[in-house]
Image (tube, rainbow, N blue to C red; front, side):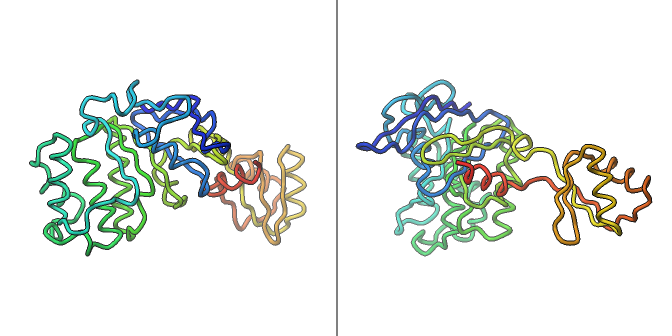
Length: 290
């Protein structure tokens, strides 16, 4: 469990984050969203003991990161796009990180294969592409077999197969009871993996909750032979109808109810699709409202 409680970090007269509170639960993937400068990175850095809060707390299993016994066995992190010494090979980087973290080097070869870098194990990381460095960063985060993963923009530089691999990794980790807290600007990609969403702006929490709740009830996209007559029937049934060219968007009816009404008044329907809000729609509506 990750618990952020009343977290505030002040630089001079500027609050980088203020009274931020949320949790990331085991068995779920939590997405932390926000524009540049919103306070996401500050929150993650405080959680990982890299920045001291002005007040409040950021805890993993009830403890500050620096108070964890062998923290790499509890928390694996990807920050700063996977920093590594450009003169080291991928193998040497992982072996060094294992040594510094008090971990065995036995998993280094296994992890390089798992992240798809076995053929580049002896290659200098300075010659790695951004995507390869991201894969190496993920391997570093997994060294201690942690139950908690904290990932800041882990998909940067990954190609489509790499993104699919990352999605599978995160879902598998959560399915095994692990906790995942991930920050990313790739909202369409994030939508496919997150269970819960925390939206932060200007250092404050703007919205949080399960993704399904934030998306709300799906609206219906309808195209019919007689739009006017069908819209009138839908409104009489208590629905809200928004015409948009040759289609209309209907809220307050299920697709079954909308189809039955069209059948009753004998209006042919050419298109009837339930459309839930995408994560990007949720994010933009919250950000613009504040």
